Length: 235
Image (cartoon, rainbow, N blue to C red; front, top):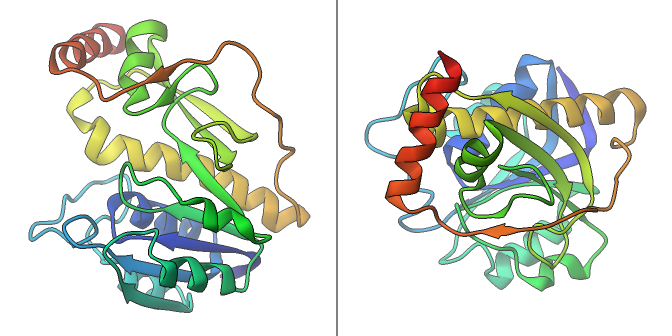
């Protein structure tokens, strides 16, 4: 197992973070450090884990870190933006911080006051699909889904893109939120981490260009339409 000295992770114990650690471990890599933040009612491990063949979503994040020899700290906070979380994050011994916090939580400007760069894997093609639940809008409008790795900025979903990959419409759209979303994001993170490990640098960052559109949480009717389109394209 090779440690990527310039890479750490800020995460809650959620499916996305578990998929990230699992993906890195499968390619023989691990971050230099992990900060696990327990946010009430968001990062608590469910009573019944949603097992999947795509990644290890059963082993708690702390146990995954122990198994893979990743040094980590754990702290409780009422929000990912608590000053103690910010301070601990900025003290982490790595230049690049992978962010896998609570769904929908936006990092406060204080995180960007230091020299750290935050890597976020966005569930949508940028800049065309910003905002919330863009996978479904992209399914309706383009017939597929894209995961995009970006360097975060204080402006939501406007950071420079460092990697992206398109995925076909799934045969089982009910898997998107619980299994495919974290798995697709983890696949892109794996590619970024492999480049960083091999070259000492991230893939070249490109500022976003072209038409941008922000999408909000999708309505149930549109979500159903996206699912039907997905099934028709996959069969």
